[in-house]
Image (cartoon, rainbow, N blue to C red):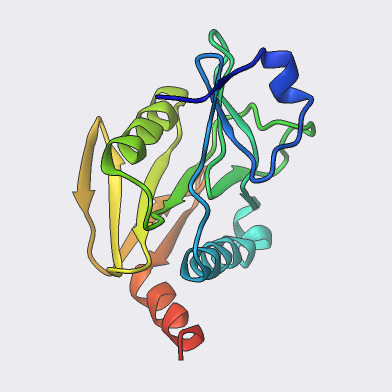
Length: 177
């Protein structure tokens, strides 16, 4: 991993464009998304936004999240879902119910898996990777990626919701015409 060495305090008090992860004292570049990436990110966040009243959740996009308090490691998932109420502050410190990473063309497999390990270690309930180009979705469980079908049931803190990948990819297709 190559990057710029900075202190945790500097990271937390600096805005980067685009924002960066903070891993072991080093700023780590996040690959900028394409239009497809951004559109799918919006669709996923919108899906969870629609559940805010019925399931008492909130979806945040590109929010800094403390994944390891001991090292100060921070990641910035594409979408994370929290139970309402949640703690206010500049950085997400609670454990998300769902984390969704949307694959960018420049993302490599090792980096994506490393991010998933951080989310799993932090205790995230469901960790998903979605590929807008190949229209595929995976779940990361116990250190393993498993290819998913058209839908999955996700636990939203005591209630369950059906997440339709087929529906989200179909909606993405509407914007690609």
